[in-house]
Every structure is written in C-alpha cells, then in structure tokens.
Length: 360
Image (tube, rainbow, N blue to C red; front, side, top):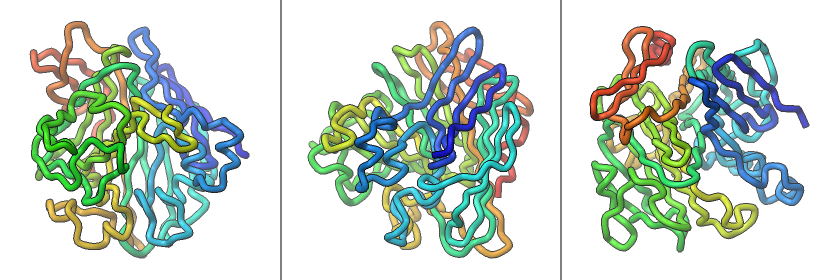
C-alpha cells in the first residue's frame, strides 16, 4: 500500500491517501489555534474492516473529503459507488511543500482526471481543483467532505431554491425525514411523522440516517455552506461556483447504521457534499428526468472528446469570533474573503482572486 502524501504551510497541513483519493487528515493553523474540520471513520485501520470483501475501497478507507466521479451509484455494476476517483489509485505528478498534483490511473467514462490540492500560505483555506479531460457521457460529480460535531451546531448556507429528498426512504427504520419531500426553507423540513424538522440545528435527530439535496438559487455568483460548531467553538465552511456545482447534499449520519463496520459508532457526522448530481440517485438517475433536474439545474457534466471541465472547491475554518451566534453571509471582493454575522461584524481573509470563476 502506498503511503500518505503530506503538504503543509504556516496556515495548515493535510495528508492525502493516494490509494483511494481521500484526505484523511486536514488541519488549519490560524490565529493561535489548530482546527481539524474533517472526520475519519474509526474502522479505517481495523484489520477486520480492511479484509471485508463486501466493502468497497472507499468504505474501507472512509475519511475526510474525496472527489466522487460519478457521485453515488455508477451505471456499470463493476464500478464501486462514488466511482474510481474514490476507489482506486492516484499517481503523484508533482509535490511541492504546500501543493500536490495527482493523476487518476483509471479513466472515468473515458475521461482523464487530475487533482490539485493546495494549502494557502496566507489564510486557513484548502484550494482543490479537479480537471476532467475528454470522455463521453453525463458524469455526476461531487466533493464528499465529512464534518463531525462533538456536541451541537448550527448550519448556514447561501440561498437555495429547493430542499429535496428522494422518493425512497434513505435508511429504512432510521430515517427521520419525509421521503419524498420538497420545501423551500431549511428550517421548515417535513419529518417522517409529518411534523416540522429544522435542518439548521444539528444534530437533526438521534440515531438517524438521512439525505437531503439543496438546490442553489438561480443566478447566484457564490455558493457557500458554514457550520458553527458549538463545542469546538469554530466555524467550518465550504465555497463553490454554483454554475458548476449547483447542489449541496447533506448526509446526516448520526449512529443510525448498526451493521458492520459502522456498528452505531459513526455519529454526529454530516457530509456537506457540493456537486453536480441528481442527489443520492447516482449515474443512471442523473441521465434521466429527475426531481433535481426539474428545478432547472444540470445533474452531471457533459463529457466529450476535446472538452475539459474544471471543478474547483474551497474548504476553510476559523475560530468563532467572540459574541457570534450566526453566519449571515460569505462574500468575495477582489483579494478578500469576508465572513459576516447578522450584527454586521466581519472576519476578512486573504483570497485567491477569481479562483472560483471561469471553471468550465
């Protein structure tokens, strides 16, 4: 097995697992604090789980963040869920102190995929870029960062036009949301019992497994999600270009899976999965009429010979400023990234101008 590849700057460090393409460890160093925003499964190093042939490589090594191509189930039965990008080897192409570049050894629908990871030198930010060259067909994609809360948290996000669940219950006996569901406000979701459920207050339930797709509002220039973690006393956030990644999918996993290797111990975790996908349905659903496409957004990248798609994504984290109880907005102005609360207070971070623009 290949070893982990590490990069670092004065603002943070990460480890990348090239055997499956995930980031099992990410740390930001900022304003005198070290913040670790992502979560790794407790069975990642357990021999029994590693030897279980029923588990895909992505499941056996589940951790941090990874790029899914395709997102969820693949059309071909021999391709594991979340695709070869999350289940096979990435070959190292270039390794600098704060930046690393990889090539996925397998092709995806005939496309060549590259990955660049960079820790900023002037802010607590991880810049990610995936290039998808050539290929044929419609490819749903998404990032898959997993955030864990020790206690409670509050979720804030850019304006969404719809909040959707799939037709089928996500985890029978453990799901607390109504399936299917369509609402327009996160704090007015419908529970399985018909009552109201607030998706901005985490955890949303006990011992549950749920999945919901948020569709970005029309004309948005920046898509963002942020979690104010109470016990950790920090703010973890994610940024995207909504023209490229028009949905944010929330996977609420709070000890609701009793079978191996989960065994009820994967708890307090939420996947905040920015993508271009049809929700949990996978590749076949993305290529057919589906509820997400009905909202007027694409559910996959259209691959073609000679065509290149570039998918960019940013992860960041800061200590919660004194007195802050919410996040009212995240905006970009030139070389500055501004995080604000409802009282008008702001935190300003250095920013790579135009990083999220002109992606495709």
